[in-house]
Structure formats: C-alpha cells, structure tokens
View 1 (cartoon, rainbow, N blue to C red):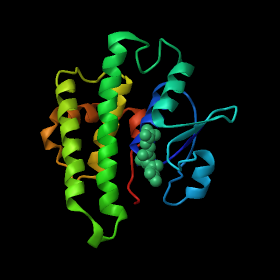
View 2 (cartoon, protein in one colour):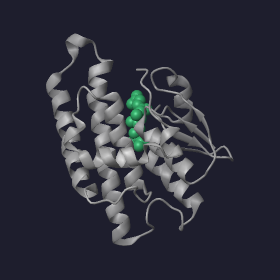
View 3 (cartoon, rainbow, N blue to C red):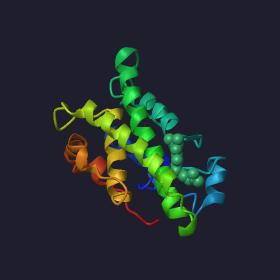
View 4 (tube, protein in one colour):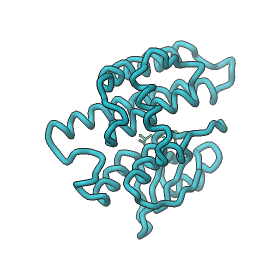
Length: 204
Ligand SMILES: N[C@@H](CCC(=O)N[C@@H](CS)C(=O)NCC(=O)O)C(=O)O
C-alpha cells in the first residue's frame, strides 16, 4: 500500500499510526496540496491528503474511509473501532471530536500562514481556536481517568494526533497547559514506534 501525505497532516498521521500499530506495511509519498497539487488531484479529485493506494491499485481518500478499510483488512479482533453498538457509537463520538479539533486547528493555521499578513482576519482565527479549545476540553474530560499506557483504539490515536498537531504546529496559538490528561496521554504514546516514527515536522 502507498500512503499519500506528510505527517504534519494530522489526518495522514492518524492513518499512518493505525497502519503501523496493525503491522500493515506501506510506502509513503509526502505530497501536499501546496507543492504537488496536479499530482494530488490525479489521486484525489479534491486534491487533499491523505489518500491510500491499495495493493491492487485501487484508491481511497478521506481518512475515515481509509481507516474503515484498514479495520476491515485487520479483521474484527484487531480493528481499532468496535464493530457495533454503544461502544462503536462512543468511539465514533470521541474520534469525531478529535477530527473536529484537527479541522478547526487547520482552519486557524491556514488563516495565519496562507494569507498575506494584512489580510489575516483575527476574529476568524479566534473563532476557530475557541472551537479547538472547546473540543479539547471535552476530550480532556473523556480521558481524565484513562489508565496509562492506554489500550490502543482509534479514539486514542486520533486524540493523540490532534494534540500533537497543536503542540508542534500551533504552539503560539493554543495553550495546552489546561489539558494535562491529554498531554499525559500523548507522552505515554510518544515512544511507541507507531508514534515516534511518524512525528510531525513543520515545513510550511
Ligand atoms: N476530512 C479530510 C480532511 C483532509 C485535509 O483537510 N487534508 C489537508 C491536510 S491536513 C489538505 O490536504 N489540505 C489541502 C487543501 O485543503 O487544499 C480527511 O479526514 O481526510
């Protein structure tokens, strides 16, 4: 399989961490919409990462759709999301909040780094950061009593990846001091190969 995207993209990283935790080998092409848009559009019509090329050449995009297929390949005993029922719904809820934090963080970051300085609209950044903080507060409560190291699941992976994206790419916009449980969760995962080998690096 070939994973398209950089680890700075939290959506790409959560796929990479999941593949590594499940022991599914993959190559990676670190394309971005900023440097490789034409090539990326040939893989995903919207020109976003991540995309995953399966061994038979079939293409999947959107991280949730990719992870759905990865769970299917891994099988029900190893899947990172429960198969059904209240446990699945709760796992999807937590994962959705982590994804929302990623989306809102990316919106605030794009406003800061993609637009000319004189056109940056601070109220829009503040709006998005407010939503990031609200989502983080909700996740903090959810993980406050989690025994560490945590059992691996998609809610844990996506929450750690969302936290790490904020820590690496948005340290000046977001104060993570107020979410000690999430910081502890991230630290408990940091040295596991799946997380250590996919650390995000800033080049935009
Ligand atoms: N909902 C999508 C979000 C993907 C996404 O926003 N990717 C970003 C990188 S973090 C991207 O490729 N942005 C380029 C653009 O929007 O032009 C998913 O879960 O895969």
